[in-house]
Image 1: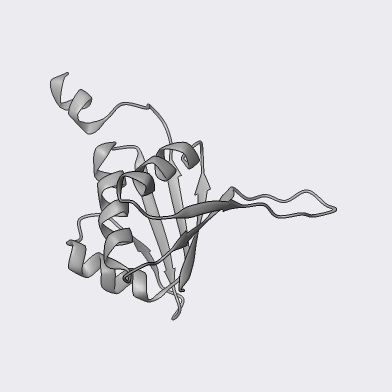
Image 2: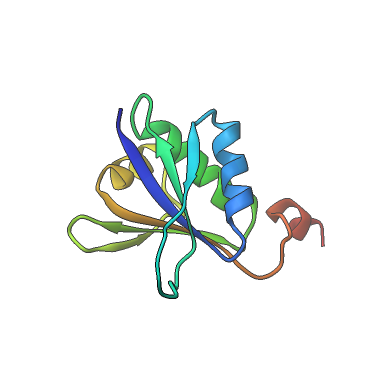
Length: 118
């Protein structure tokens, strides 16, 4: 079964895992053992049952829910893509080419809906 790994940063681990749960994607945290200090986030391994479509929808929903969330994808060709403003179909194609994925949540922890009310 195919798997993909996402590195989460800036406190995004819990909310990203919740988005995966809502999409019914099986996932687990991967812990790295090292004798030295490592500058990285927490790695989440996701089982891709049925392809990249479900993870594309989960990633887009996670990014759209709060304006302070971003997902960066480094493709196998070395291109960096911010997963914002794409359709689910286009996001699926981008994720199929992913070498690495980073989920980042920074700044205020307000949802897009809460910010629209202000």
